[in-house]
Length: 183
Image (cartoon, rainbow, N blue to C red; front, side, top):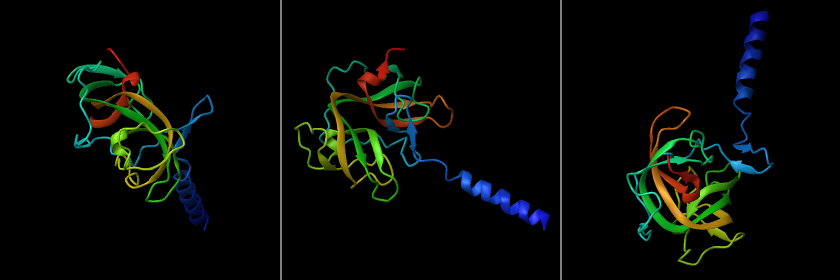
């Protein structure tokens, strides 16, 4: 009988420990940033929207290396990246509820102009309600979202080895120019 209760208690602890993640990390400054990218397609086919224009004079040339100073995914900050693509566009942080259900994702970095349904060429303002065409994370495509911020910039598609170890990430979308530095 004692062994049965011990087994039940151990099973309960294991089950409850799997429920502790909220899907968000709290920054020390109190801002909530979406950090749990379990459903994110870290690697992609490298396919970009048809109307996305390659940058004519990017700071980081295709094939060059850069150091990422981005923290929107574990293992990015400090990782050495190889530039695979460079595009001039507007990058947005957005908040949305996945079409697959679950918690609302706050301040997701980055969705670009060409990944917002019907966005055209006019920059979207914070507060604008939009429909996402991006498919970076499970439940993102087709989700209703709110634009949190906009930044006209060059975005980069990169290959990198996470600083936390694991498989090489290929064709990751997107890192902004301000999130890269020369090695």
